[in-house]
Amino acid sequence: MKEIKIHDKIFVPYITFEEIEHAIKKVANTLYEQHKNDVPVFVGVLNGVIMFMSDFLKHYPGECEISFLKLKSYEGTHTTGKVEMEMEIPMDLSGRHVIILEDIVDTGNTLEALYEILNKKNVKSVKIATLLFKPDSYKKDLPINMVAISIPNRFVVGYGLDYDGLGRNLPDIYQIKLEE
Ligand code: IMP
Image (cartoon, rainbow, N blue to C red; front, top):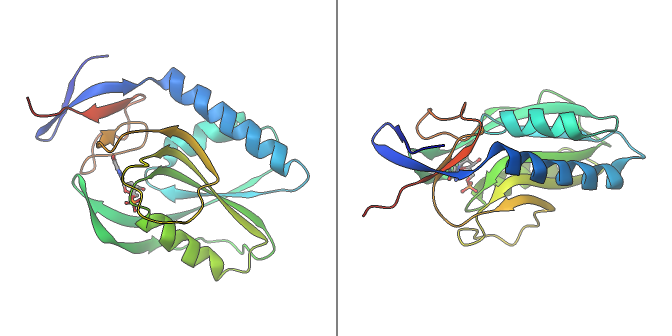
């Protein structure tokens, strides 16, 4: 892996696909142990979750259903602070065990919006599982039930995550290069 340029910024290799897959397997097995006697609904937050959802499902050995919603809070490399709903969950979740799959939890604004949305849906239980978590940036007290990989507060791309629309298709994760 070598440095790459996306738009005006340079990114350096950070987490390999093998490391990501290993962390995802652990999350899938832990969630299976907790839900092997029910049929959970995994709700993915688009667009960033596409690769995580796809690989997670391959490693989840039990019965499950899936759905998606689309939220938006980032422009470029900075969060706008306000979270907008771009696509509602097209499924009745009442009485269901719901597990939200997120690509990354950064400030927690999106997470807060997700809890607000799910709290109105009469679900049986809600859990949050995120691929990446930036603890130094997190500003909320809301529970995050499962974190695959914790990372420092630096912008990353790849494996579903984008910088202004680009980089989502990279199989590995890259970190923004600090100015020298
Ligand atoms: P939060 O609302 O601040 O927690 O940010 C959550 C959303 O911001 C994620 O679902 C991502 O879409 C985006 N995001 C946060 N950090 C990064 C990053 O380092 N790279 C790419 N997108 C990010």
